[in-house]
Length: 330
Image 1 (tube, one colour):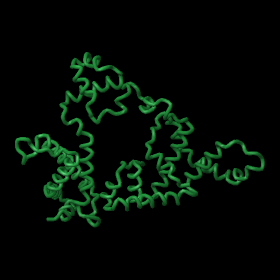
Image 2: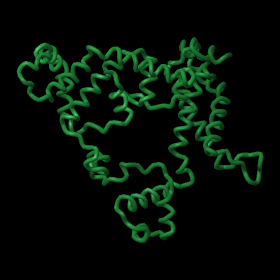
Image 3: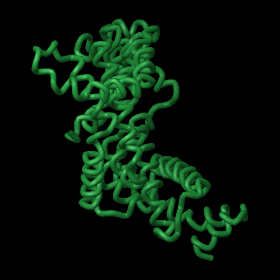
Image 4: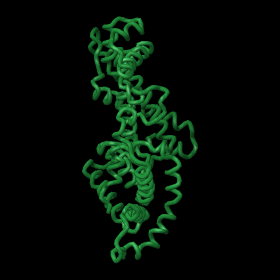
């Protein structure tokens, strides 16, 4: 039976069809695992048996196949596949490849370490980067040689991030702790940005589903994981140039929906509130639009109230979020 026939049976309630479908596509999963491992230079032959992979490579391939199997089952069980759009293997490929790639990116630096060694590396790097101790002090504290400490400190683990560089007791923004004064925004600025993002989300949600997916993944905003044009193209079966054009069309739709939107009114209200008192005879615009501004303030009050009650927890926005917010819609 074909993949499409098996998946129709599964969608119709035949649970046994899922297992048949999985076994039928084991070759696909293994092929993608080898392809992904090759891109990371992980396909190494055994020095004594040139026709066989090394134990290291076999371990990686087993792990990648495991990740692929989990993603395969998740995608099938989600029932998102539509056979009228593409063959099952075409639909599955970017999802399996993406999950395997992410797994390698997160784990490739740690594979040569045992669990105990990994803990020692993490501890040594924390002492060195956070507490500013020298290698001799770290060696004495951990009971290991100074040469070993030097190796641990230089080891590329891929898991030492900004949260590892601040004390565990610190519950504030790690970026503000590491770069004091550079990221601080006033309460007024934080609220203004928060409301702008909430109202921009309203415009974003009016876009068609495909446009939201492409624009959201391109910019990495509104719950969409950031992805490359190639990854988005594989998912939607489009060329990279077509994805770029689709993104630009989505932005153009946002630009056209901006005039008269609550976002435009909110920005106008904010500008008016920040202006100095106008001389008599120069306040015509304010007089004409004052009722509209008052209504706009009332409409955004809920968003504003939520934002002001949670100022301390407003997260630092990513560059992509700022880029979308300040795309010239107006």
